[in-house]
Length: 221
Image (cartoon, rainbow, N blue to C red; front, side, top):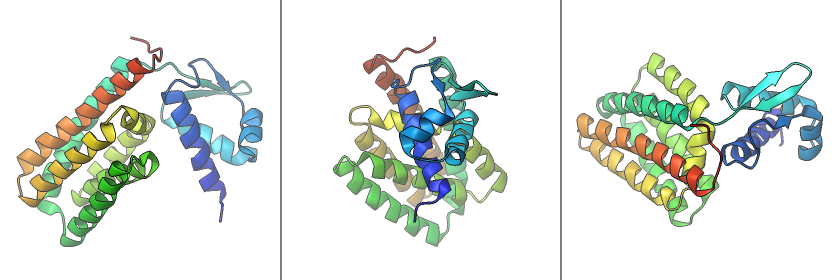
């Protein structure tokens, strides 16, 4: 059954992709009426999608003028990936010693499906499983404040964490990095798990930068 929230999420994902890959250029105006017609949806899910895009820092909603697409600043994005890398590294270090048996089993299940998605070059499925992989590790640290902060950071970077997976071979390298993280956790090596997670997130930032350069997207330096 299609719900308003699922329609809103679909609109958000499509617009996020188009903004982060340069299909929709900085300075463009996203109008509710135009988007409603494009997605055959009422204004309510469109309005919610735009609010989510604003929370991610992709647009600025101006009363009676529409939502303006903000310029992408590569240095700012790299700073965000750096901070996320450090916090996720800390998270995985905690999770190595706190993860439960049930969570370990779920992590293996997610990874098996992600490996299959990477093998089949199934971008949409891998993107979904990639988010599930990281969120499970957030929960496995069993620190509510850390979880909330990581989810907040993820919301800001979400479109770009998705876009970096479009860089050639990134699905496969990302999947291999996930496998290495799991091995370190299973060995109880928190330092190694943290090191690999930090590198994993920094690699994601590099992949994003290279993808943007490859596609010729204009980025404010």
